[in-house]
Length: 224
Image (cartoon, rainbow, N blue to C red; front, side, top):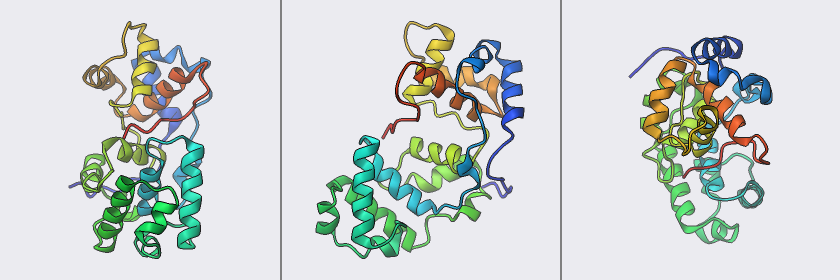
């Protein structure tokens, strides 16, 4: 397991310059999309347990519907932090009454149990871990797959070299860039992305924006 300390966030300008040199076809799209800037969430404090709990609640729902359910849960537990101790303030029927499905309730209880046993790394611990080690540590949680952890890596920890190859938006973005009949497979996207390393996150961010050109959505959609 890596013990290197990883700062949250990366040099966006350096990432763009690298990808521009290595992939001129993709770089031609950069002026057409909203500017790629450092994400303010990279410097905001966050609780990994809270972030994972919210990811579970948002899965397979529209943002508005999920936000409504999260608001009800926060009211039920009398806290805006979803953690092992706070989630334990509400019993199962109360959370189900908030709109939490049975599967999501079981996932939240599994997450809370693991957090209570100290199995979910803190932000400080995550900063000392490699990407794959973080994925291995968090995906045993019920309802948490690789895609959810990759979103945390990109948008909360600010890791520079993450390419979510299973994300349909990223694949459709590359389909548009390369003028393909069909979206590339995850394996094809991974191979194409080798040239973007070690700054694959900025390519993913660009491809999401390219995929969304002319579409109302502007953020990744849950794949799990």
